[in-house]
Length: 214
Ligand SMILES: [Mg+2]
Image (cartoon, rainbow, N blue to C red; front, side, top):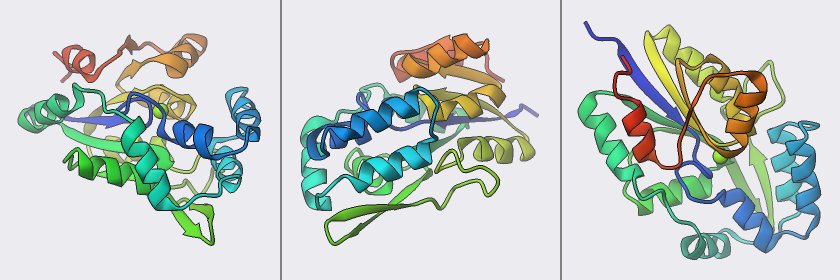
């Protein structure tokens, strides 16, 4: 029997061409959000604290944010083909995201993509955004959605898993995945941590790289 195969992928900057959270903050938050981002990039604070502090600076309603996203965020044009490739090849495809549910689900709906998602939950209350973490790991406070946890669950279920990502919150699953596709910040971190990976720019590259992944 062939091995069960899965692909876990990041959303922001991986499926989308730009990081949606950053696009929102750059437009709607005061400049202080970037100082928090720099603390995150220096690994001084985790993704969960970064997001909570950054989105606490934001005063906007959901409709305005979605309108802005619709005109400023594009999908990797090869991702739809990749979804079909996984479906026809019997490869389980899931999204694990440190973004926010309101825009992840909005964009997936708009692009007609039906893939399971784990992401953080945004609660809009009185003009501010509060974040809940339904997929956090109880033993670690660094991330909101624990991407590693899903990878371990899949391993327990007998899957060999490829991981695709571009940022800091992708490092933990990249350490444990059977095969890694990385770009940008994640590629730099993989170099630093000596994690083998295949560089990708588009999902078409991932698709080619998965040939022979069994
Ligand atoms: Mg990302």
